[in-house]
Length: 193
Image (cartoon, rainbow, N blue to C red; front, side, top):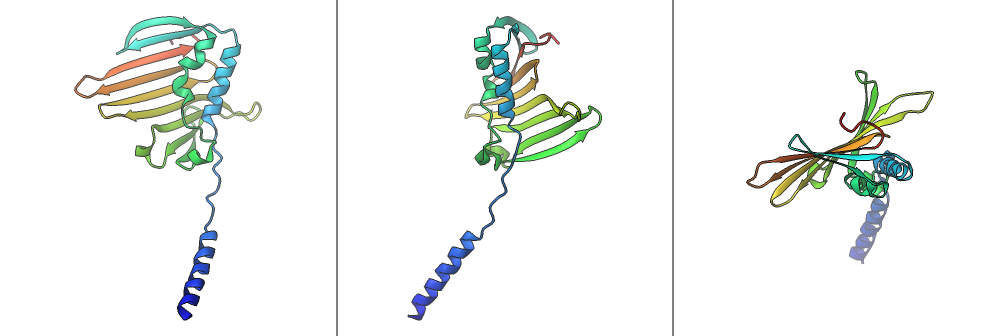
């Protein structure tokens, strides 16, 4: 009888101990993905001339105009990043912010808690502080590393709000020299700048 009472008491204590665990506070991160989706939606409905310039190993290779309907497809590298407004994803990242006086920008950086478990190694926002007109996000920088059995692909991505985006892909195949491909898509600026 004493043995059963002890097991019952231990079970109740264990049950209450499990319920008393503190919940992790909800992380309220800026959704970089939402900002980019908004940009894509804007370009899809605007009358911009959209130009795509490609460089392979620093040599200008190809320039084409792309139709508005294909803009989302061109921006696919940005549209498949993790959405940090989703709490399941936000728990895997940490946020750091600082003011950089040399460029007059607030820099908000999201990095994974366990870098080897994530493709996206960094999402960074550069924001111009402006009290009168609200703060404006100017640039979004994303770094991604994709490792396969036979290759490592590093993508350095830059989105300049209301102007252009650029993806530089560094591909290292096993036993071959690395190749660097840069694709710049612009809709509201000179693509050769």
